[in-house]
Amino acid sequence: MKKPHMILIGTLVGLTLILTACAPGPRVVGTPGITISTDMVFVAYGNFIFGMQAETGNVVWNYPQDSNNQILFYSEPYVSGEYVYVGDVANNFYKINKQTGSPVWTFSEANGYFIGQANEADGVVYVPSNDGNLYALNDAGNLLWVFETDHFLWSQPQVAEGVIYQGSMDSFVYAISADGNEIWSTEMSGAVVGSPVLSEDGSRLYVGSIGGEMVALSTSDGAVIWRFDAGDSIWGRAGLADGKLYFADSGGDLHALDPNNGDLVWQQSVQGSVIGGISVLPDGIALATEEGLVKTLTFDGNPLWEAGLSGNVFQAPAVSDQYVIVGTIEGDNLVYAYNLAGTQIWSATPEK
Image 1 (cartoon, one colour):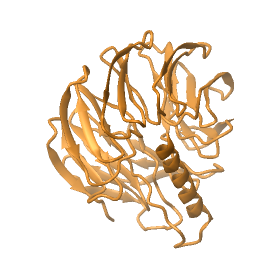
Image 2 (image 1 turned 45 degrees about the vertical axis):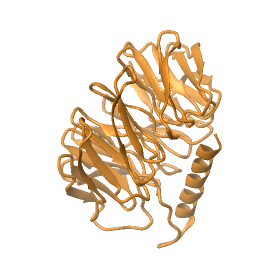
Image 3 (image 1 turned 180 degrees about the vertical axis):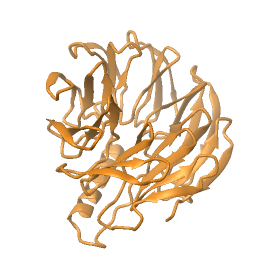
Image 4 (image 1 turned 30 degrees about the vertical axis):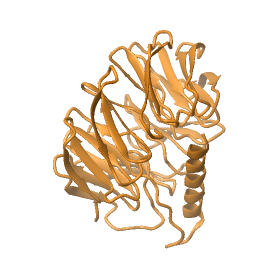
C-alpha cells in the first residue's frame, strides 16, 4: 500500500502548491480527466478542457479560449445531455456546451478545488469538492444545498430514487436525501476514493476502500451485507456486468465476485498497480495499470488484447461501444484511442 499512498500525498502537495502560488508559480503534472460521449472525447488537463473528435482525435474546441495559470483542470468531466460539467483547482465549477465549448454558467462558491467527477439527476447537479462538501446545484448553477463531510471528496456521487450516495475520504459512505439531509452513514475500513456502484435494482451499493475491503451495503439503511478482503487497497471504481462484480486493487490483482454474497468467482494478477479501476465494455472489461499496460478481458477473465504505453496511467479507461480511450502522464502522448479489437486508431497531445 505504500506506493499508492505516496501518489496521493504527492498529488495533494502539488495541488496545494498550485493554490498558494502566484502566476506562473509552481506547477504540478496531474493526470488527465477523460470522458467519452458518443462521437466526442472530453479531456480536462492543465489550463484547458478539450473537446475532441473520437474518431480522429482532432480538437474541436478548447475552454477557456486563453490560458490562465491560476486555473487548472484535472477532474474527470461529466456529460449529461448537451452539456459538459467539470471543475478546476481554483474552486470553480463549469457547465459547458459540449458541441461548441461555450460556457453556460460558472459556480464559484465552493471552498475547495474539484478532483472528483460530478453527477446529475432530475435537473440537479451533484458536485463533490476537496473541501469535503457535496454541492447540489440547479440547472441555472444556483446553490440548492451543501452536505458536509470530514474529508476530501474524490468519489463521484451516485443517485437513485431521489437518494444520493457519496463516498468520502473520511472513511464513511453517506446516503443523502434530495433536500440535503443525511439518511444514514456507514464507516468503511479506509478512505473511499473510487465511486460506489449501485446494483441494477438499486437495493445494494458496492464500495471499495483503501482499507482493502470491498463491501456490499443495503441502500435502505447502510447495513453491511457482506465484506470481501482484497488484501490490498482499492482506489478505483468497480464494474458490475454479466452477473459479476469486478474490481482491481493496488497490488495488481483483478477480482470477480458474486455480487449476491461476495464469494470469489475468479482472480488473476494483472502485473501492475491498478489505481483508476474498471470500465465495462460490451463484451468484457478494461483496465490500465499505473505502469501503462492497457488490458481488456472477457467477463470470464480470458484475455482479449493488451497494449503497452510509455507513460503512467491513473484513471480507468474511458470506454464506449466503439472506443477505449486512455490518458497518460509523462508518456509520448497524453491521449490514446483504440477500437474494441485493440487497434490503436490515434494518439494525441491536444493543444490550443
